[in-house]
Length: 164
Image 1 (tube, rainbow, N blue to C red):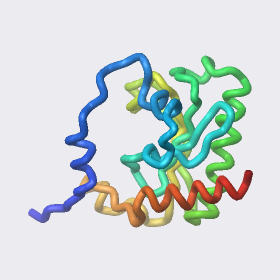
Image 2 (cartoon, one colour):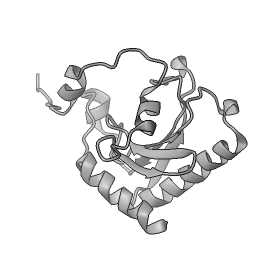
Image 3 (cartoon, rainbow, N blue to C red):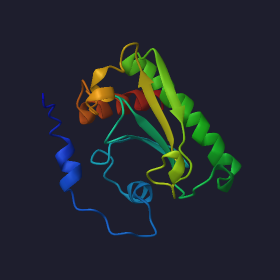
Image 4 (tube, helix red, strand yellow):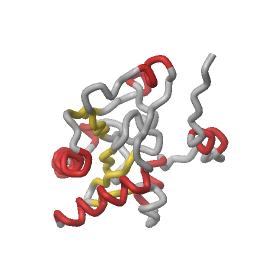
């Protein structure tokens, strides 16, 4: 049997786990000023954008409301509007920075729908290219990311800054 090595995963496996608290991971990131450490690339009035540290595909971003809520109807209308406007803006930035051929965009609401942080909704934006799903994720359960997350975060941050 061949072995595929994904050494970056060991950091996640061995990292100390946060004790259960009322504040979600996204709330703690929202309240932090360490944007580069948390891969935050943009902050708006009621939402922020960050790279997924354990992505399905390179450039996998998430748009997250600052306020911790589990459902869309718990957001104020202004927050829902900004969530969608920031999602649209983020897609346009990814088109500029990464030139994907398409996107998967959506939310997993509730644990049975795949939400890893079900108490704090967030929009996933996953850039896609023809042929980007190959034997690696299907058979090897491994994603191949062609660019370091920190480098990509810097490029996306610059693109957001250029729009402001």
